[in-house]
Image (cartoon, rainbow, N blue to C red; front, side):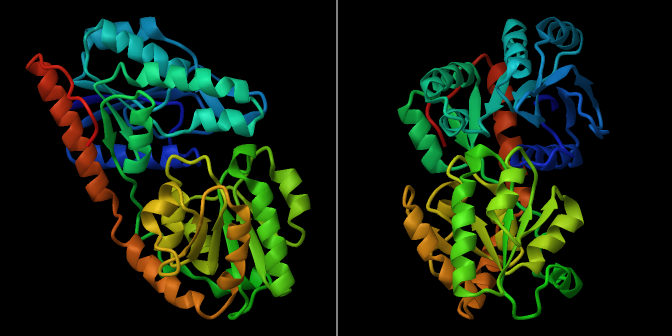
Length: 381
């Protein structure tokens, strides 16, 4: 197939959307498909393979996040001269909206994916009045596509109840060779002030308002009350970093990491704290489990799908921060070792090959249906 991917983020951006798209693109290209990428120009060098960076703007309050500017005419010219088999739009910003309009004008098959809970973000940034109109925009945007990919069946059912149509569940994967317990590094632990038996708690993610970071600070305080020797390591960056550094005295802040450096940090910790309630999935939970960490999360998104509480991790009911904090002591005791081993076993079942298989299969079906002049299927699968 000839596939055109339009997205506001792509590696080496550090977020779950970029990670997912990078793995999907690599998998599709390995199978002989042509994938041409359009994304906003970044401050650093990207390796898109075949594709182009276009004009974009950064959010004034979050410079790491960029939106591409509309380019409907350019898409019409490019795709009119060299028509692809299918257009996949991964983000719903101005760039994606112009791509959707151009693809429909040219009668090209279009699929989309919903990676970010923008309506939940509106609440996190105290813009609750925007939540309903944002949801309305997302519904109109995605309902114009042949299919919309969503990470879990639960979220698909919730979105379907809100009027979203033709939803397809596409899970997430992890590089189980990269993220693995064998990357545990005693020297790295020593640099954190941790010995062999010192419990090390880890958090990985964007340090932003929507990530429920106040609860992370409370969990750190609870852990230190129980064991003053416990260490806390935070990987990631964002607008809340300075405030969080004040809230987590004594914690190690590593900044944003990727690749082998990130894998070493995962494997060298003992437990993973993930208090977010705004994810569509939360790929860091899967990376942590594949690395052999005891994970504490809410019964939501990746936590709900991957963790059996008390067996391969710990879950707190959604909306109950006290229950989340009550699980912290269990992360600091010898019994967590068994959960860590089972977490690694769970992670090994989530390689990327099966995810790419599902994505490829759906795109083929969308193209074939378009070639036969058939309407998109209803419902979600």
